[in-house]
Length: 411
Image 1 (spheres, helix red, strand yellow):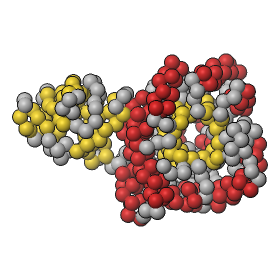
Image 2: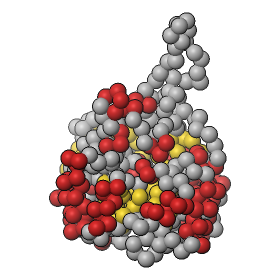
Image 3: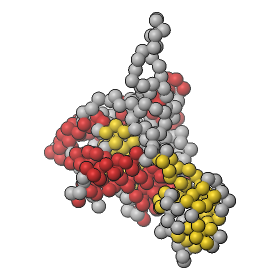
Image 4: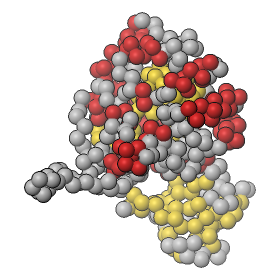
């Protein structure tokens, strides 16, 4: 196990199991409202907490509950209920930014992590928040030199959190970037009365725009129409520098992404962190990990970001994902024969053939990827299966009835 903690998103039970299987040390998730993905349809309910904590405890994985939105007066009752539920169910920590949430969680003895929404950018801010928190997420706009200096100051001055341990520094390592400083944007609130800082962003910045001179009517020339939609951050190529600076936790963004995304991103960063510790972090491996990361949802990659002193100016240039792979739903599991490790599938659409890259996903299965090497149709070996076919495939892991089968192919 490496010294650095890989923290993965868990927006569903499928993503939760997937993150654990892929090597995450911790997962973060929201329940009900009051998290930065409050609009998402797949937020957990308070009643899910016992099961989430049970699954993670059995796998030695930490649980971080996000309560990181701006809070209004009418939110305070729910905030306290969420924190009380976290305490009762022994959630490892809550991630918070609003002072009201910090104060209440601290008052009931909950471990707290300071969200990036606080834009912590200097050692004195770290020193202040250490009165409440054991982990501080630094602003995404800092350089690695600034980050390294803050960590050195924490050690030199022995800055400890409520636990009595040195304050740990968490850093955003991969995923979607907001054009606003540390994601604190008010554009969606201004245009749609939907606050990004309360988890209701309508993503105005991801749309295409034209810049027109109102007096002359002339359209100004810009590099592309997506002038407020930055590429996704990717740090896999300089993870050695980040870990070497003393960062303790690497956060992988993607609370609203699919379990397939969580699987690929978590595994790549797990392998990279392990390779750094083993002294086998090489250019060839970086290239392979980058290619894998490009295969799942992304808006193009900004390699380096502010951490390497770059200016924000790498815009996505297109709407939506630029992933090199796309997933096509094929069918679902109709039976699983435990003694022989064979799964039965009904093909509901499209077709699959020997050599295809497939994956199965489900709430308790997570994501299992495999290449189709052999299968049976009507009890006989086959090479192609089409809509309506009932097939059986030897598999390496247990599947559940109604788990979904997908084909992964080049976009």
